Length: 499
Ligand SMILES: Cc1cc2nc3c(=O)[nH]c(=O)nc-3n(C[C@H](O)[C@H](O)[C@H](O)COP(=O)(O)OP(=O)(O)OC[C@H]3O[C@@H](n4cnc5c(N)ncnc54)[C@H](O)[C@@H]3O)c2cc1C
Image (cartoon, rainbow, N blue to C red; front, side, top):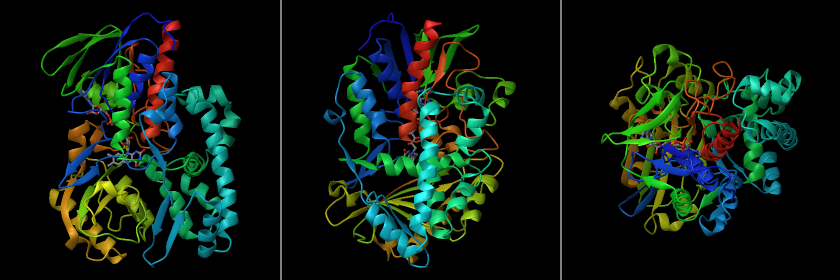
């Protein structure tokens, strides 16, 4: 632990994983950190609800890159194993198609070979070439974008040089084109395209760079946390408290106080002012500009490329039977993937035939539900809220029905008859609960035309001592990335204090 920095006071607005990671990273460096959260518990979108004997993980369920979590503990001289118990999931995903075929993605190369050969004799070799490409993209990204916290296209060009940027990141292609360069079987194309779920975007609009996601999943593994994903938030909260972070829940920040190019503190809904030398916002950039800074239309206009990712209709079902055909993570594919993504990202409508992500955590953790029961968590991606194209409550309910009928047709017989409890969230609930931009679930969309795949910078463009962490800034959304953003903001703050 280093204590070379004088005790500057840092206020962090929001205790999502980005805010918790920043709090831990900055407290480890000796700063006095206050973490202020509007909800009644820490974790942000990593949230939990216990209802009728079922433990529902309300937010994220797929975890990769555990080393990014481990770093928070090792830097503080602790062992992650003493706080959070990660366990590998096998198979990684089970993929269901309308024609009845099922393909597993596995960490075991022999199983992968068998699964792919059954699909198409050419598939194993094509997949091996695709994975070599995926690993190249991943290695290039880790060297600069992840390790150095590159925040803009200019920093990227400076670090990699123009030619290497183009070659290393396959910049002329979309994710889908990058997949199709290597893979010919349409089902395998659809599976690999759906790795985009990690960032809630479209494979047709996302840069080819997003093909790094399979390398991340296969090389760093796919993990669950015994006791449910919320144990991650509890483990991080414990570490933060041990490091002296002061945590306030049920405290909403309503204003950032500023003078010239400096922020000087925050005001909470009860009127209390708190002074800070530095402020880190885990509230997303655009909502913070709108609600805390009252930013001008011109300032907001500059941010329009950082449009929201998709949202989700989140169905948490407690069912009084088990479905043995399910794995822990399952995908039920659309027969019309292009139309599906176009509905979400271009038309801002509910898809007629959605691809459905379904999590059945009881497969790894029977304690999560009463005996003989199953948790079926269903997350089809849907558009973020768009005031120009409102979707009614009835339309969301009709979509819920469409999703359940599709699942019944694809093998989850009589699913609707077996529901004994349900928790149902629309994008309005997600926006209200976490103040995410237009109900987005992964922060900023990854889109090569809107933002080249970049998210907003971590340093505020307006104030010298205001920083952002979480899914709306680089390196983006998803649990591992927001945890990395908390560590990168520490590096930026330390570098700026040296200047
Ligand atoms: C249903 C769902 C499924 C998902 N599935 C996955 C998955 O499988 N794998 C994965 O890696 N990721 C997944 N994600 C995405 C992942 O949850 C997020 O990327 C990540 O948790 C976001 O962390 P964050 O720190 O950016 O923001 P958040 O978790 O949103 O944290 C921001 C915090 O700031 C608080 N806040 C906001 N404004 C204020 C204010 N003014 N004052 C005080 N507090 C404030 C909010 O209440 C919130 O607690 C999923 C998300 C959802 C919703």
